[in-house]
Image 1 (cartoon, rainbow, N blue to C red):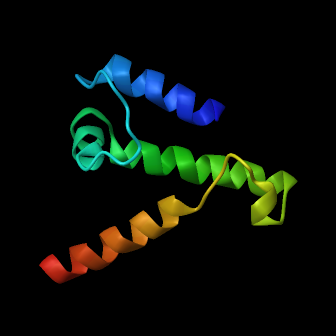
Image 2: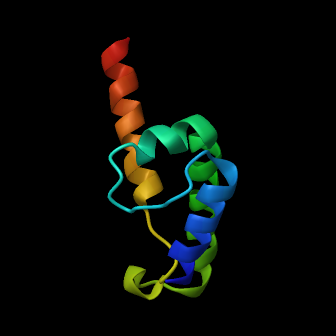
Length: 83
């Protein structure tokens, strides 16, 4: 829950949004406009790498995910299609 609270505070402070709703249909557009997807992917990759030093079981990595790997793979596939 702390993660969601911190995300809400950051979103409200760095974007024109004054309310956070997890199911907002425009959340990706807001994050893409005011955030940095490449930086987020790099941060997530580094964080995951750090957690791997301590934990082997993904379910033990409470504040970590591998969504960055999925996004990177999707980006690679869409880039190949547009060439």
